[in-house]
Image 1 (cartoon, helix red, strand yellow):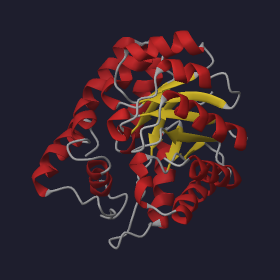
Image 2 (image 1 turned 90 degrees about the vertical axis):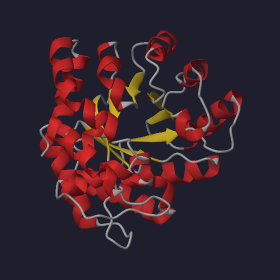
Image 3 (image 1 turned 180 degrees about the vertical axis):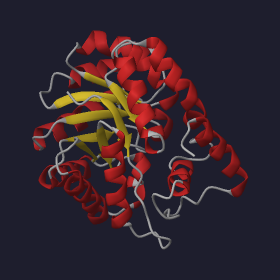
Image 4 (image 1 turned 45 degrees about the vertical axis):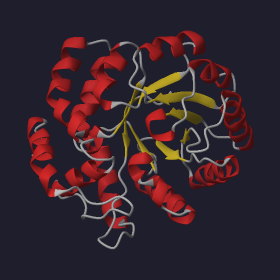
Length: 291
């Protein structure tokens, strides 16, 4: 089971919006050195919605190549078209990804039966471990615990990223799916408590900026060491909050650039962080001892 602090990696870009491969390699090395337990390439934070298919798959292949097997790479391959999700998942498998993360179909609002059949089709089409991703705040689609439980019986569906921030869902999903189904937090603000209550890790935005501390916090929480986990998390509260002061990944890309790890590139319709937010994010970084 992949567990721990799983960074939802930003995709570094040049000023013209093209992918910056040199900085991407530097970021991979940074996360391996700082203790991130796994990397998600081309998730929401990686701007998957604005890269075309070839760019998307090239970033995944590049991250796999740069990691060189040192930690797992999870490829974001979700789509609101089942056929497209199958294609992206096939290409991620060919690129050597260890698992795939598949967001619920956005915009078209499928029923629970539609969600079940969507994920079942992908799992049957591509032999790679697959992680469901429920984030109704972005997709307008909430995959209910009962649907997750149905899908958990499919051999290569191994877990779920639950990003509602509702801690009660953890127990409900665990009771329905059992101990060997991985349940990850997709909400940084509640990830400490989520893992203390039995979650298997966090797919984290904050981990882009403070990977060592997030790794230490999540590790302590999984072990049930509440005092240590809460003490570390107290220093990260500002990042958990203010990395969402504007739409993700706007603030986190600004913060990573502020750390000198990449240039100031982002792709429309997203725009660079506005100047009135700079000091707020900087203060959160100071609180976390990042700068």
